[in-house]
Amino acid sequence: MTEPLKIAMPKGRIFEEAVELLRRAGFSLPPEFDDSRKLIVDAPDADMRFILAKPMDVPTYVEHGVADIGVAGKDTMIEEERDVHEVLDLGISPCYMAVAGLPEYEKTDINPKVASKYPNLASRYFKEQGEQVEIIKLNGSIELAPLVGLADRIVDIVSSGQTLKENGLVELETIVSITSRLIVNPVSYRMKDSRIDDIAVRLAEVVEEDVR
Ligand SMILES: Nc1ncnc2c1ncn2[C@@H]1O[C@H](COP(=O)(O)OP(=O)(O)OP(=O)(O)O)[C@@H](O)[C@H]1O
Ligand SMILES: O=P(O)(O)OC[C@H]1O[C@H](OP(=O)(O)OP(=O)(O)O)[C@H](O)[C@@H]1O
Image (cartoon, rainbow, N blue to C red; front, side):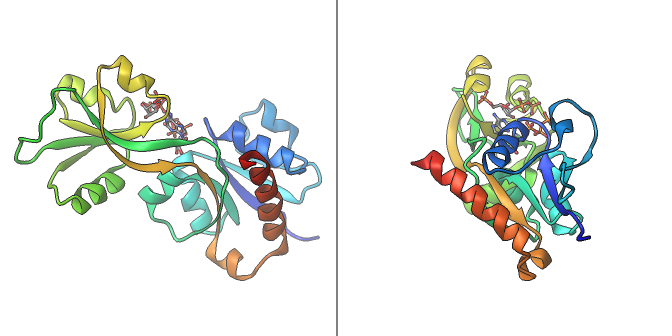
């Protein structure tokens, strides 16, 4: 019997949308997807094994080959810079990365502080802009930082804009738009596994339907 194809799935807000895409593409999915804390679940016909990871860790699982493919936010790929192939823009969980701050923010400080859950992405962005900043890594509630004086600005994900608005912050610059992508391990990619091709083609068809 052939080994099941291993798929790293992001838990959290992308999960439901990714599962919906797979269902629409005609894959039979584990019943445990609906209500379980299990982190490894097999598809009913045992041809696919799903590994449920933190969204930021999906590229890591795929790079190391413990998952052949994965669903990852573009933000996680930019932040983590893992050696993986991006084969399809799934178009799900759209949002964007932005610089935000208090409305009265002015670029005056010598070494301004920027808080973010994405220190690499933020650091690269400001370097490209030719601005020297000190990055402060936080793990969530990023919008708090300028409110309490921990940082002058933040780099964070915006989707509805509600969090910025409710906390009296304004968007200062847009960095990059984000959707979730289908990613593939470089070795699996080179081996041209027909099962990976099949998943990519069937998902592309569903994505295409949504664009039309
Ligand atoms: N409004 C949003 N805020 C954050 N991430 C979003 C948003 N909209 C879409 N996304 C996508 O969802 C992913 C994050 O999912 P989620 O918030 O479930 O995980 P997380 O960042 O690990 O959250 P937590 O640490 O709160 O568990 C991001 O990588 C991004 O691609
Ligand atoms: O534009 P919006 O629709 O308001 O979404 C953006 C917010 O959502 C995310 O936070 P999340 O809910 O993941 O919580 P966190 O702050 O704990 O990361 C993100 O970090 C923003 O704070």
